[in-house]
Image (cartoon, rainbow over all chains, first blue to last red; front, side):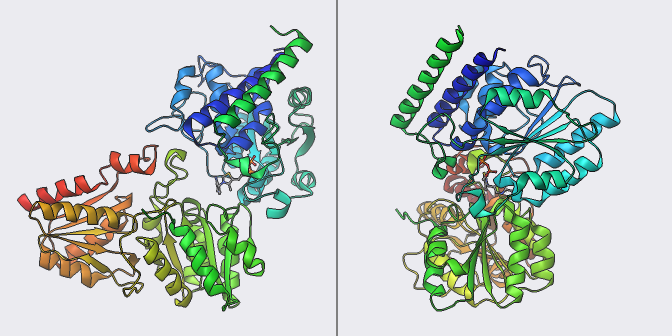
Amino acid sequence: MEIQELKVKAAQIRMDLLTIIHRAKTGHTGGSLSNTDILTALYYEIMNVDPSNPKWDDRDRFIASKGHSVESLWCILADRGFFPKEELETYSQFGTRLIGHPNNKVPGIEMNTGALGHGLPISVGMALAAKRDDRPYRVFCLMGDGEQAEGSNWEAAMAGSHYKLDNLIGIIDRNRLQISGSTEEVMGLEPLEEKWTAFGWNVVSINGNNMEELLKAFRSVPEVAGKPTLIMANTTKGKGVSFAENVPAWHHHVPNDKELELALTELKATIEELTQKGQVH
Amino acid sequence: MNKIPNRQVICDTLLELAKDDRDIMVLASDSRGSAAMAPFANTFPEQFVEVGIAEQNIVGMSAGLAHSGKKPFVTSPACFLSMRSIEQVKVDIAYSRTNVKLIGISGGVSYGALGMSHHSVQDIAVARAIPGLAIVLPADRHETKKLTEALVKYDGGVYVRIGRNPVEDVYETDDYPFEIGKAITVREGKDVTIIGVGETVRIALDAAKALNDEGISARVINMHTIKPLDEEAIITAARETGRIITVEEHSIYGGLGAAVAEIVVQNHPVPMRVLGIPDEPAIAGKSAEVFHHYGITGDNIKQIAFELINK
Ligand SMILES: Cc1ncc(C[n+]2csc(CCOP(=O)(O)OP(=O)(O)O)c2C)c(N)n1
Protein backbone atom coordinates (compact mmCIF):
# COMPACT_ATOMS: atom_id res chain seq x y z
CA MET A 1 0.00 0.00 0.00
CA GLU A 2 1.03 3.59 -0.63
CA ILE A 3 1.96 5.54 2.45
CA GLN A 4 -1.05 7.89 2.13
CA GLU A 5 -3.36 4.92 1.81
CA LEU A 6 -1.93 3.44 5.01
CA LYS A 7 -2.55 6.70 6.82
CA VAL A 8 -6.12 6.77 5.61
CA LYS A 9 -6.51 3.16 6.67
CA ALA A 10 -5.30 3.96 10.17
CA ALA A 11 -7.82 6.78 10.46
CA GLN A 12 -10.60 4.45 9.31
CA ILE A 13 -9.57 1.82 11.84
CA ARG A 14 -9.71 4.49 14.53
CA MET A 15 -13.25 5.33 13.48
CA ASP A 16 -14.22 1.65 13.56
CA LEU A 17 -12.72 1.00 16.97
CA LEU A 18 -14.40 4.02 18.51
CA THR A 19 -17.68 2.84 17.06
CA ILE A 20 -17.47 -0.68 18.51
CA ILE A 21 -16.37 0.62 21.91
CA HIS A 22 -19.23 3.10 21.91
CA ARG A 23 -21.73 0.40 20.97
CA ALA A 24 -20.50 -2.07 23.58
CA LYS A 25 -20.07 0.64 26.23
CA THR A 26 -16.76 -0.92 27.22
CA GLY A 27 -13.21 -0.97 25.94
CA HIS A 28 -9.68 0.34 26.25
CA THR A 29 -9.87 3.41 24.06
CA GLY A 30 -6.60 5.25 24.72
CA GLY A 31 -4.18 2.37 24.19
CA SER A 32 -6.02 1.14 21.14
CA LEU A 33 -5.81 4.56 19.50
CA SER A 34 -2.12 4.88 20.35
CA ASN A 35 -1.13 1.59 18.71
CA THR A 36 -3.33 1.79 15.62
CA ASP A 37 -0.53 3.09 13.37
CA ILE A 38 1.80 0.30 14.51
CA LEU A 39 -0.80 -2.36 13.77
CA THR A 40 -1.73 -0.77 10.45
CA ALA A 41 1.89 -0.83 9.31
CA LEU A 42 2.28 -4.45 10.41
CA TYR A 43 -0.95 -5.89 9.01
CA TYR A 44 -1.18 -4.00 5.71
CA GLU A 45 2.48 -3.75 4.76
CA ILE A 46 5.02 -5.61 6.86
CA MET A 47 3.80 -8.99 8.05
CA ASN A 48 3.48 -12.04 5.88
CA VAL A 49 0.01 -13.25 6.75
CA ASP A 50 -2.80 -14.78 4.71
CA PRO A 51 -6.36 -14.18 5.94
CA SER A 52 -7.61 -17.09 3.84
CA ASN A 53 -5.07 -19.40 5.46
CA PRO A 54 -4.47 -17.97 8.94
CA LYS A 55 -2.51 -21.00 10.19
CA TRP A 56 -0.10 -21.14 7.25
CA ASP A 57 3.17 -22.50 8.68
CA ASP A 58 5.49 -19.73 7.60
CA ARG A 59 3.27 -16.80 8.49
CA ASP A 60 4.78 -14.05 10.58
CA ARG A 61 3.44 -14.12 14.13
CA PHE A 62 1.94 -11.20 16.00
CA ILE A 63 1.45 -11.29 19.75
CA ALA A 64 -0.54 -8.52 21.41
CA SER A 65 1.04 -8.61 24.82
CA LYS A 66 -0.91 -5.47 25.75
CA GLY A 67 -4.04 -7.48 25.11
CA HIS A 68 -6.39 -4.87 26.55
CA SER A 69 -5.94 -2.78 23.38
CA VAL A 70 -7.77 -5.43 21.42
CA GLU A 71 -10.25 -3.17 19.64
CA SER A 72 -7.79 -1.90 17.03
CA LEU A 73 -6.80 -5.51 16.39
CA TRP A 74 -10.40 -6.75 15.99
CA CYS A 75 -11.11 -3.95 13.51
CA ILE A 76 -7.98 -4.67 11.49
CA LEU A 77 -8.47 -8.44 11.41
CA ALA A 78 -12.06 -7.91 10.26
CA ASP A 79 -10.98 -5.40 7.62
CA ARG A 80 -8.32 -7.77 6.35
CA GLY A 81 -10.91 -10.52 6.05
CA PHE A 82 -9.93 -12.89 8.86
CA PHE A 83 -13.60 -12.92 9.86
CA PRO A 84 -16.75 -11.15 8.63
CA LYS A 85 -16.91 -7.45 9.39
CA GLU A 86 -20.48 -7.71 10.72
CA GLU A 87 -19.14 -9.80 13.58
CA LEU A 88 -17.61 -6.62 15.03
CA GLU A 89 -21.11 -5.81 16.22
CA THR A 90 -20.88 -8.66 18.72
CA TYR A 91 -17.80 -7.18 20.38
CA SER A 92 -18.13 -7.69 24.18
CA GLN A 93 -21.70 -8.97 23.90
CA PHE A 94 -22.88 -12.08 25.74
CA GLY A 95 -21.33 -15.26 24.38
CA THR A 96 -19.19 -13.52 21.73
CA ARG A 97 -15.73 -14.68 20.67
CA LEU A 98 -14.73 -11.04 20.17
CA ILE A 99 -14.19 -10.47 23.88
CA GLY A 100 -12.20 -7.68 25.51
CA HIS A 101 -8.87 -9.46 24.92
CA PRO A 102 -7.28 -11.44 22.07
CA ASN A 103 -8.28 -15.09 22.09
CA ASN A 104 -7.44 -17.81 19.61
CA LYS A 105 -11.00 -18.84 18.90
CA VAL A 106 -10.71 -15.95 16.43
CA PRO A 107 -8.80 -16.57 13.17
CA GLY A 108 -5.62 -14.53 13.08
CA ILE A 109 -5.02 -14.67 16.83
CA GLU A 110 -2.11 -16.86 17.83
CA MET A 111 -2.39 -16.85 21.60
CA ASN A 112 -4.73 -15.71 24.33
CA THR A 113 -3.42 -12.64 26.08
CA GLY A 114 -4.77 -10.17 28.63
CA ALA A 115 -2.63 -10.72 31.67
CA LEU A 116 0.29 -8.36 31.06
CA GLY A 117 3.84 -9.61 30.84
CA HIS A 118 3.06 -12.88 29.03
CA GLY A 119 3.58 -11.84 25.42
CA LEU A 120 7.34 -11.58 25.24
CA PRO A 121 8.13 -14.96 26.84
CA ILE A 122 5.69 -16.59 24.38
CA SER A 123 7.27 -14.71 21.50
CA VAL A 124 10.75 -15.81 22.52
CA GLY A 125 9.53 -19.39 22.40
CA MET A 126 8.06 -18.92 18.94
CA ALA A 127 11.17 -17.22 17.60
CA LEU A 128 13.38 -19.91 19.09
CA ALA A 129 11.28 -22.60 17.39
CA ALA A 130 11.69 -20.81 14.05
CA LYS A 131 15.45 -20.82 14.52
CA ARG A 132 15.61 -24.47 15.54
CA ASP A 133 13.43 -25.49 12.57
CA ASP A 134 15.18 -23.12 10.19
CA ARG A 135 11.95 -21.40 9.25
CA PRO A 136 11.72 -17.90 7.79
CA TYR A 137 8.96 -16.42 9.92
CA ARG A 138 9.41 -13.54 12.31
CA VAL A 139 7.67 -12.79 15.59
CA PHE A 140 6.36 -9.32 16.42
CA CYS A 141 5.42 -8.64 20.03
CA LEU A 142 3.64 -5.45 21.04
CA MET A 143 4.01 -4.42 24.67
CA GLY A 144 2.80 -1.51 26.76
CA ASP A 145 5.21 0.74 28.59
CA GLY A 146 3.41 0.38 31.92
CA GLU A 147 3.64 -3.34 31.24
CA GLN A 148 7.43 -3.08 31.48
CA ALA A 149 7.08 -3.19 35.27
CA GLU A 150 6.33 -6.93 35.05
CA GLY A 151 9.55 -8.83 35.68
CA SER A 152 8.65 -11.56 33.19
CA ASN A 153 9.48 -9.15 30.35
CA TRP A 154 13.04 -8.88 31.56
CA GLU A 155 13.45 -12.62 31.93
CA ALA A 156 12.32 -12.93 28.32
CA ALA A 157 14.54 -10.05 27.23
CA MET A 158 17.52 -11.93 28.61
CA ALA A 159 16.52 -15.15 26.85
CA GLY A 160 15.88 -13.35 23.55
CA SER A 161 19.42 -12.07 23.35
CA HIS A 162 20.95 -15.21 24.86
CA TYR A 163 19.48 -17.23 21.98
CA LYS A 164 20.43 -14.55 19.44
CA LEU A 165 16.87 -14.26 18.15
CA ASP A 166 17.18 -11.74 15.32
CA ASN A 167 13.79 -12.94 14.07
CA LEU A 168 12.18 -11.44 17.18
CA ILE A 169 10.92 -7.86 17.16
CA GLY A 170 9.69 -6.34 20.40
CA ILE A 171 7.69 -3.15 20.09
CA ILE A 172 6.93 -0.88 23.03
CA ASP A 173 3.97 1.43 22.69
CA ARG A 174 5.72 4.20 24.60
CA ASN A 175 2.75 6.46 25.20
CA ARG A 176 4.00 7.37 28.68
CA LEU A 177 0.67 6.73 30.36
CA GLN A 178 -0.83 3.77 32.18
CA ILE A 179 -4.04 3.61 34.24
CA SER A 180 -3.05 5.59 37.33
CA GLY A 181 -1.21 8.33 35.44
CA SER A 182 2.20 8.83 33.87
CA THR A 183 4.56 5.86 33.76
CA GLU A 184 7.32 7.93 35.28
CA GLU A 185 5.16 8.70 38.32
CA VAL A 186 3.66 5.24 38.75
CA MET A 187 6.89 3.28 38.27
CA GLY A 188 9.72 5.07 36.54
CA LEU A 189 11.13 3.28 33.50
CA GLU A 190 13.77 5.65 32.21
CA PRO A 191 16.34 5.22 30.83
CA LEU A 192 14.28 2.56 29.07
CA GLU A 193 16.24 2.33 25.83
CA GLU A 194 19.48 1.86 27.72
CA LYS A 195 17.92 -0.96 29.72
CA TRP A 196 17.01 -2.86 26.56
CA THR A 197 20.41 -2.18 25.10
CA ALA A 198 22.02 -3.51 28.25
CA PHE A 199 19.94 -6.67 27.91
CA GLY A 200 21.52 -7.27 24.50
CA TRP A 201 18.87 -5.92 22.14
CA ASN A 202 19.31 -3.63 19.17
CA VAL A 203 17.15 -0.65 20.01
CA VAL A 204 15.53 1.60 17.39
CA SER A 205 13.68 4.66 18.59
CA ILE A 206 10.98 6.19 16.39
CA ASN A 207 7.79 8.19 16.40
CA GLY A 208 5.29 5.35 16.57
CA ASN A 209 2.47 7.44 15.15
CA ASN A 210 4.46 8.29 12.05
CA MET A 211 3.85 5.85 9.21
CA GLU A 212 7.08 6.67 7.36
CA GLU A 213 9.19 6.03 10.44
CA LEU A 214 7.32 2.84 11.28
CA LEU A 215 7.82 1.37 7.83
CA LYS A 216 11.47 2.33 7.75
CA ALA A 217 12.13 0.73 11.12
CA PHE A 218 10.20 -2.46 10.37
CA ARG A 219 11.80 -2.84 6.94
CA SER A 220 15.32 -2.61 8.28
CA VAL A 221 15.11 -5.38 10.90
CA PRO A 222 17.26 -7.11 11.80
CA GLU A 223 19.79 -4.34 11.63
CA VAL A 224 22.26 -6.45 13.56
CA ALA A 225 22.58 -10.16 12.87
CA GLY A 226 22.17 -12.29 15.98
CA LYS A 227 20.35 -9.63 18.00
CA PRO A 228 16.66 -9.22 18.69
CA THR A 229 15.27 -5.79 17.85
CA LEU A 230 13.37 -3.51 20.19
CA ILE A 231 11.41 -0.77 18.50
CA MET A 232 10.74 2.01 20.94
CA ALA A 233 7.60 3.44 19.37
CA ASN A 234 7.04 6.83 20.97
CA THR A 235 3.32 7.44 20.67
CA THR A 236 0.47 9.51 22.04
CA LYS A 237 -2.20 7.76 24.07
CA GLY A 238 -5.58 8.56 22.54
CA LYS A 239 -3.89 9.51 19.24
CA GLY A 240 -6.13 10.95 16.55
CA VAL A 241 -8.90 12.22 18.82
CA SER A 242 -7.89 15.65 20.11
CA PHE A 243 -9.76 15.53 23.40
CA ALA A 244 -8.57 12.02 24.27
CA GLU A 245 -4.89 12.62 23.57
CA ASN A 246 -2.68 12.34 26.65
CA VAL A 247 -5.65 12.15 29.03
CA PRO A 248 -5.14 9.22 31.46
CA ALA A 249 -8.90 8.71 32.00
CA TRP A 250 -9.27 7.72 28.34
CA HIS A 251 -7.43 4.49 29.16
CA HIS A 252 -10.83 2.87 29.52
CA HIS A 253 -13.16 5.79 29.10
CA VAL A 254 -15.97 5.04 26.66
CA PRO A 255 -17.08 7.83 24.32
CA ASN A 256 -20.64 9.02 24.84
CA ASP A 257 -22.83 9.90 21.83
CA LYS A 258 -21.51 13.40 21.57
CA GLU A 259 -17.86 12.44 22.02
CA LEU A 260 -18.20 9.76 19.36
CA GLU A 261 -19.68 12.20 16.90
CA LEU A 262 -16.94 14.72 17.59
CA ALA A 263 -14.21 12.10 17.25
CA LEU A 264 -15.62 10.75 14.00
CA THR A 265 -15.83 14.28 12.59
CA GLU A 266 -12.17 14.87 13.44
CA LEU A 267 -11.08 11.61 11.87
CA LYS A 268 -13.16 12.25 8.75
CA ALA A 269 -11.41 15.60 8.40
CA THR A 270 -8.06 13.83 8.73
CA ILE A 271 -9.03 11.44 5.97
CA GLU A 272 -10.22 14.24 3.71
CA GLU A 273 -7.01 16.14 4.20
CA LEU A 274 -4.92 13.04 3.41
CA THR A 275 -7.01 12.22 0.37
CA GLN A 276 -6.61 15.67 -1.10
CA LYS A 277 -2.90 15.71 -0.41
CA GLY A 278 -2.13 12.28 -1.79
CA GLN A 279 -4.96 11.89 -4.30
CA VAL A 280 -5.96 8.65 -2.68
CA HIS A 281 -9.22 7.40 -4.12
CA MET B 1 -30.80 -0.52 46.25
CA ASN B 2 -27.34 -0.15 47.74
CA LYS B 3 -25.01 1.94 45.55
CA ILE B 4 -21.75 1.43 47.43
CA PRO B 5 -19.42 -1.27 46.14
CA ASN B 6 -17.52 -3.28 48.75
CA ARG B 7 -14.17 -1.97 47.48
CA GLN B 8 -15.26 1.54 48.45
CA VAL B 9 -16.30 0.31 51.89
CA ILE B 10 -12.81 -1.08 52.43
CA CYS B 11 -11.27 2.26 51.49
CA ASP B 12 -13.67 4.24 53.69
CA THR B 13 -13.01 1.96 56.67
CA LEU B 14 -9.24 2.04 56.23
CA LEU B 15 -9.34 5.83 55.93
CA GLU B 16 -11.04 5.92 59.33
CA LEU B 17 -8.68 3.43 60.98
CA ALA B 18 -5.45 4.72 59.46
CA LYS B 19 -5.85 8.04 61.25
CA ASP B 20 -4.91 6.38 64.53
CA ASP B 21 -2.73 3.65 63.14
CA ARG B 22 0.27 4.85 61.17
CA ASP B 23 1.27 1.23 60.49
CA ILE B 24 -1.67 0.57 58.21
CA MET B 25 -0.41 0.70 54.64
CA VAL B 26 -2.13 0.25 51.30
CA LEU B 27 -0.28 -1.03 48.24
CA ALA B 28 -1.54 -0.90 44.66
CA SER B 29 -0.33 -2.20 41.30
CA ASP B 30 -1.62 0.49 38.92
CA SER B 31 -4.92 -0.47 40.51
CA ARG B 32 -5.76 2.30 42.96
CA GLY B 33 -8.70 3.36 40.79
CA SER B 34 -10.19 -0.11 40.37
CA ALA B 35 -9.66 -0.76 44.07
CA ALA B 36 -11.33 2.59 44.90
CA MET B 37 -8.20 3.40 46.89
CA ALA B 38 -7.43 6.79 45.32
CA PRO B 39 -8.89 8.63 48.38
CA PHE B 40 -6.53 6.68 50.64
CA ALA B 41 -3.56 7.42 48.39
CA ASN B 42 -4.41 11.12 48.45
CA THR B 43 -5.13 11.37 52.18
CA PHE B 44 -2.23 9.26 53.46
CA PRO B 45 0.50 9.42 50.82
CA GLU B 46 3.04 8.26 53.40
CA GLN B 47 0.98 5.12 54.03
CA PHE B 48 0.45 4.36 50.37
CA VAL B 49 2.80 2.50 48.02
CA GLU B 50 2.47 2.24 44.25
CA VAL B 51 4.44 -0.62 42.69
CA GLY B 52 3.24 -0.39 39.09
CA ILE B 53 2.05 -3.42 37.14
CA ALA B 54 4.02 -5.96 39.17
CA GLU B 55 1.99 -8.44 41.19
CA GLN B 56 4.90 -10.59 42.30
CA ASN B 57 6.71 -7.53 43.56
CA ILE B 58 3.66 -6.17 45.39
CA VAL B 59 3.38 -9.34 47.48
CA GLY B 60 7.11 -9.61 48.14
CA MET B 61 7.30 -5.95 49.15
CA SER B 62 4.28 -6.26 51.41
CA ALA B 63 5.89 -9.22 53.17
CA GLY B 64 8.98 -7.09 53.76
CA LEU B 65 6.88 -4.24 55.12
CA ALA B 66 5.00 -6.63 57.42
CA HIS B 67 8.25 -8.11 58.64
CA SER B 68 9.18 -4.60 59.72
CA GLY B 69 5.98 -4.07 61.72
CA LYS B 70 3.71 -2.55 59.10
CA LYS B 71 0.16 -3.75 58.43
CA PRO B 72 0.04 -3.91 54.64
CA PHE B 73 -3.18 -4.18 52.65
CA VAL B 74 -2.42 -5.23 49.09
CA THR B 75 -5.14 -4.19 46.67
CA SER B 76 -4.94 -5.70 43.19
CA PRO B 77 -7.28 -7.49 40.77
CA ALA B 78 -8.12 -10.91 42.25
CA CYS B 79 -7.22 -12.74 39.03
CA PHE B 80 -3.60 -11.56 39.10
CA LEU B 81 -3.11 -11.32 42.85
CA SER B 82 -4.23 -14.89 43.41
CA MET B 83 -2.28 -16.42 40.55
CA ARG B 84 0.59 -14.28 39.33
CA SER B 85 2.05 -13.93 42.78
CA ILE B 86 1.02 -17.21 44.33
CA GLU B 87 4.56 -18.35 45.05
CA GLN B 88 5.23 -15.13 46.91
CA VAL B 89 2.01 -15.74 48.82
CA LYS B 90 3.08 -19.27 49.68
CA VAL B 91 6.66 -18.54 50.70
CA ASP B 92 6.78 -14.86 51.71
CA ILE B 93 3.42 -14.69 53.49
CA ALA B 94 2.24 -18.15 54.56
CA TYR B 95 5.53 -19.94 55.15
CA SER B 96 7.21 -16.94 56.73
CA ARG B 97 4.07 -16.04 58.71
CA THR B 98 3.98 -12.39 57.75
CA ASN B 99 1.00 -10.19 58.50
CA VAL B 100 -0.25 -9.30 55.03
CA LYS B 101 -3.84 -8.74 53.91
CA LEU B 102 -4.41 -9.51 50.26
CA ILE B 103 -7.50 -7.80 48.89
CA GLY B 104 -8.48 -9.33 45.57
CA ILE B 105 -10.75 -6.89 43.79
CA SER B 106 -13.12 -7.49 40.88
CA GLY B 107 -13.12 -11.21 41.67
CA GLY B 108 -15.23 -13.98 40.22
CA VAL B 109 -16.66 -12.96 36.86
CA SER B 110 -16.83 -9.24 37.67
CA TYR B 111 -14.71 -8.54 34.60
CA GLY B 112 -17.28 -10.44 32.52
CA ALA B 113 -16.45 -9.78 28.87
CA LEU B 114 -12.70 -9.47 29.45
CA GLY B 115 -12.41 -13.25 29.35
CA MET B 116 -10.65 -15.96 31.29
CA SER B 117 -7.44 -14.00 31.86
CA HIS B 118 -9.49 -11.58 33.94
CA HIS B 119 -11.92 -13.98 35.59
CA SER B 120 -10.96 -15.10 39.05
CA VAL B 121 -12.74 -18.39 39.60
CA GLN B 122 -9.81 -20.58 40.65
CA ASP B 123 -8.53 -18.30 43.38
CA ILE B 124 -10.24 -19.99 46.30
CA ALA B 125 -9.00 -23.42 45.22
CA VAL B 126 -5.45 -22.15 44.99
CA ALA B 127 -5.55 -20.18 48.23
CA ARG B 128 -7.12 -23.09 50.13
CA ALA B 129 -4.10 -25.24 49.43
CA ILE B 130 -1.80 -22.82 51.21
CA PRO B 131 -1.38 -23.63 54.89
CA GLY B 132 -2.12 -20.82 57.29
CA LEU B 133 -3.72 -18.49 54.77
CA ALA B 134 -7.23 -17.41 55.80
CA ILE B 135 -9.81 -16.85 53.03
CA VAL B 136 -12.75 -14.51 53.49
CA LEU B 137 -15.46 -13.29 51.08
CA PRO B 138 -17.78 -10.70 52.60
CA ALA B 139 -21.46 -10.84 51.62
CA ASP B 140 -22.39 -7.17 51.58
CA ARG B 141 -21.24 -3.69 52.56
CA HIS B 142 -22.03 -4.18 56.26
CA GLU B 143 -19.98 -7.33 56.40
CA THR B 144 -17.18 -5.72 54.42
CA LYS B 145 -16.90 -2.97 57.02
CA LYS B 146 -16.83 -5.47 59.89
CA LEU B 147 -14.31 -7.60 58.04
CA THR B 148 -11.99 -4.67 57.39
CA GLU B 149 -12.01 -3.79 61.08
CA ALA B 150 -11.32 -7.43 61.95
CA LEU B 151 -8.48 -7.62 59.42
CA VAL B 152 -6.59 -4.79 61.09
CA LYS B 153 -6.66 -6.73 64.37
CA TYR B 154 -5.97 -10.15 62.82
CA ASP B 155 -2.32 -11.15 62.84
CA GLY B 156 -1.48 -13.25 59.78
CA GLY B 157 -2.04 -13.74 56.09
CA VAL B 158 -5.57 -13.34 54.74
CA TYR B 159 -6.90 -13.51 51.19
CA VAL B 160 -10.06 -11.47 50.76
CA ARG B 161 -12.07 -11.56 47.56
CA ILE B 162 -14.66 -8.98 46.60
CA GLY B 163 -16.57 -8.17 43.42
CA ARG B 164 -16.67 -5.01 41.38
CA ASN B 165 -20.21 -3.71 41.55
CA PRO B 166 -22.43 -2.77 44.49
CA VAL B 167 -24.39 -5.75 45.77
CA GLU B 168 -27.77 -5.88 47.42
CA ASP B 169 -27.62 -5.96 51.21
CA VAL B 170 -27.89 -9.24 53.07
CA TYR B 171 -28.04 -7.55 56.46
CA GLU B 172 -30.23 -4.64 57.39
CA THR B 173 -27.65 -3.23 59.78
CA ASP B 174 -24.15 -4.06 60.87
CA ASP B 175 -25.44 -4.78 64.35
CA TYR B 176 -24.39 -8.44 64.57
CA PRO B 177 -21.28 -10.26 65.71
CA PHE B 178 -18.68 -11.00 63.03
CA GLU B 179 -15.71 -13.21 63.56
CA ILE B 180 -13.26 -14.56 60.99
CA GLY B 181 -13.81 -18.34 60.92
CA LYS B 182 -17.34 -18.30 62.32
CA ALA B 183 -20.18 -18.90 59.83
CA ILE B 184 -23.44 -16.98 60.16
CA THR B 185 -26.86 -18.53 59.86
CA VAL B 186 -28.78 -15.79 58.11
CA ARG B 187 -32.02 -17.77 57.97
CA GLU B 188 -33.18 -20.73 60.02
CA GLY B 189 -34.65 -23.77 58.29
CA LYS B 190 -35.03 -27.52 58.65
CA ASP B 191 -35.60 -29.15 55.21
CA VAL B 192 -32.46 -28.14 53.37
CA THR B 193 -29.42 -25.91 53.91
CA ILE B 194 -28.17 -23.53 51.26
CA ILE B 195 -24.62 -22.35 51.87
CA GLY B 196 -23.46 -19.25 50.06
CA VAL B 197 -20.30 -17.18 50.16
CA GLY B 198 -19.67 -13.59 49.22
CA GLU B 199 -22.18 -12.30 46.75
CA THR B 200 -24.02 -15.61 46.42
CA VAL B 201 -25.37 -15.36 49.98
CA ARG B 202 -27.95 -12.93 48.66
CA ILE B 203 -28.94 -15.40 45.93
CA ALA B 204 -29.22 -18.20 48.50
CA LEU B 205 -31.45 -16.00 50.61
CA ASP B 206 -33.71 -15.22 47.66
CA ALA B 207 -34.01 -18.95 46.92
CA ALA B 208 -34.90 -19.67 50.56
CA LYS B 209 -37.65 -17.07 50.51
CA ALA B 210 -39.09 -18.53 47.31
CA LEU B 211 -38.92 -22.02 48.80
CA ASN B 212 -40.77 -20.81 51.85
CA ASP B 213 -43.70 -19.86 49.61
CA GLU B 214 -43.76 -23.48 48.45
CA GLY B 215 -43.83 -24.78 52.01
CA ILE B 216 -40.16 -25.73 52.18
CA SER B 217 -38.07 -24.47 55.04
CA ALA B 218 -34.51 -23.68 53.91
CA ARG B 219 -31.65 -22.74 56.17
CA VAL B 220 -29.18 -20.23 54.74
CA ILE B 221 -25.60 -20.13 55.94
CA ASN B 222 -23.21 -17.34 55.06
CA MET B 223 -19.83 -19.10 54.97
CA HIS B 224 -17.88 -15.87 54.73
CA THR B 225 -14.70 -17.60 55.87
CA ILE B 226 -13.74 -20.52 53.67
CA LYS B 227 -10.58 -21.08 55.67
CA PRO B 228 -10.46 -21.76 58.56
CA LEU B 229 -13.79 -23.41 57.79
CA ASP B 230 -16.58 -23.51 60.37
CA GLU B 231 -16.91 -27.29 60.35
CA GLU B 232 -19.37 -27.34 63.21
CA ALA B 233 -21.92 -25.24 61.33
CA ILE B 234 -21.69 -27.64 58.37
CA ILE B 235 -22.01 -30.82 60.43
CA THR B 236 -24.96 -29.37 62.33
CA ALA B 237 -26.65 -28.39 59.07
CA ALA B 238 -26.12 -31.87 57.63
CA ARG B 239 -27.55 -33.47 60.74
CA GLU B 240 -30.49 -31.13 61.16
CA THR B 241 -31.56 -30.52 57.55
CA GLY B 242 -30.29 -33.65 55.78
CA ARG B 243 -29.53 -31.92 52.48
CA ILE B 244 -27.01 -29.29 51.45
CA ILE B 245 -26.64 -27.05 48.43
CA THR B 246 -23.60 -24.83 48.02
CA VAL B 247 -23.50 -21.90 45.65
CA GLU B 248 -20.45 -19.90 44.68
CA GLU B 249 -18.94 -17.60 42.04
CA HIS B 250 -16.03 -19.99 41.55
CA SER B 251 -15.07 -23.15 39.71
CA ILE B 252 -16.90 -26.21 41.03
CA TYR B 253 -13.42 -27.59 41.70
CA GLY B 254 -11.72 -26.71 44.94
CA GLY B 255 -13.96 -23.95 46.23
CA LEU B 256 -16.72 -23.66 48.81
CA GLY B 257 -18.60 -26.70 47.54
CA ALA B 258 -15.52 -28.90 47.67
CA ALA B 259 -14.60 -27.64 51.12
CA VAL B 260 -18.08 -28.30 52.48
CA ALA B 261 -18.25 -31.72 50.80
CA GLU B 262 -15.00 -32.79 52.45
CA ILE B 263 -16.52 -32.11 55.85
CA VAL B 264 -19.90 -33.63 55.00
CA VAL B 265 -18.62 -36.96 53.66
CA GLN B 266 -16.20 -37.44 56.52
CA ASN B 267 -18.64 -36.59 59.28
CA HIS B 268 -22.27 -36.89 58.34
CA PRO B 269 -22.86 -37.88 54.70
CA VAL B 270 -26.04 -36.40 53.22
CA PRO B 271 -27.15 -35.63 49.65
CA MET B 272 -25.36 -32.55 48.39
CA ARG B 273 -25.20 -30.39 45.27
CA VAL B 274 -22.38 -28.05 44.31
CA LEU B 275 -23.39 -25.08 42.19
CA GLY B 276 -20.74 -22.93 40.54
CA ILE B 277 -18.83 -22.39 37.30
CA PRO B 278 -18.20 -25.64 35.40
CA ASP B 279 -14.74 -26.73 34.30
CA GLU B 280 -14.45 -24.49 31.24
CA PRO B 281 -13.34 -20.94 30.46
CA ALA B 282 -16.42 -19.06 31.65
CA ILE B 283 -18.58 -17.61 28.91
CA ALA B 284 -18.09 -13.88 28.25
CA GLY B 285 -20.77 -11.42 29.26
CA LYS B 286 -21.95 -9.26 32.10
CA SER B 287 -21.84 -10.86 35.57
CA ALA B 288 -25.61 -11.29 35.66
CA GLU B 289 -25.61 -12.92 32.21
CA VAL B 290 -22.85 -15.31 33.23
CA PHE B 291 -24.64 -16.19 36.49
CA HIS B 292 -27.83 -16.83 34.57
CA HIS B 293 -26.04 -18.96 31.99
CA TYR B 294 -24.66 -21.26 34.68
CA GLY B 295 -27.80 -21.35 36.79
CA ILE B 296 -26.35 -19.41 39.70
CA THR B 297 -29.82 -18.04 40.38
CA GLY B 298 -32.51 -18.28 43.01
CA ASP B 299 -34.78 -20.13 40.60
CA ASN B 300 -32.25 -22.82 39.86
CA ILE B 301 -31.38 -23.28 43.54
CA LYS B 302 -35.08 -23.71 44.21
CA GLN B 303 -35.22 -26.38 41.50
CA ILE B 304 -32.23 -28.21 42.95
CA ALA B 305 -33.81 -28.10 46.42
CA PHE B 306 -36.96 -29.74 45.03
CA GLU B 307 -34.87 -32.47 43.43
CA LEU B 308 -32.94 -33.16 46.63
CA ILE B 309 -36.09 -33.25 48.75
CA ASN B 310 -38.02 -35.54 46.41
CA LYS B 311 -35.13 -38.00 46.19
C1 LIG C 1 -0.80 -8.92 34.95
C2 LIG C 1 -1.74 -7.77 34.78
N1 LIG C 1 -1.85 -6.86 35.77
C3 LIG C 1 -2.72 -5.85 35.64
C4 LIG C 1 -3.51 -5.72 34.53
C5 LIG C 1 -4.55 -4.62 34.42
N2 LIG C 1 -4.21 -3.63 33.41
C6 LIG C 1 -4.75 -3.63 32.18
S1 LIG C 1 -4.19 -2.42 31.19
C7 LIG C 1 -3.19 -1.81 32.41
C8 LIG C 1 -2.31 -0.63 32.14
C9 LIG C 1 -1.43 -0.87 30.98
O1 LIG C 1 -0.60 0.21 30.75
P1 LIG C 1 0.39 0.21 29.52
O2 LIG C 1 1.16 -1.07 29.51
O3 LIG C 1 1.18 1.44 29.56
O4 LIG C 1 -0.60 0.14 28.27
P2 LIG C 1 -1.26 1.33 27.43
O5 LIG C 1 -1.00 2.62 28.14
O6 LIG C 1 -0.59 1.31 26.12
O7 LIG C 1 -2.71 1.02 27.33
C10 LIG C 1 -3.34 -2.59 33.58
C11 LIG C 1 -2.67 -2.33 34.86
C12 LIG C 1 -3.37 -6.71 33.52
N3 LIG C 1 -4.11 -6.70 32.41
N4 LIG C 1 -2.46 -7.70 33.67
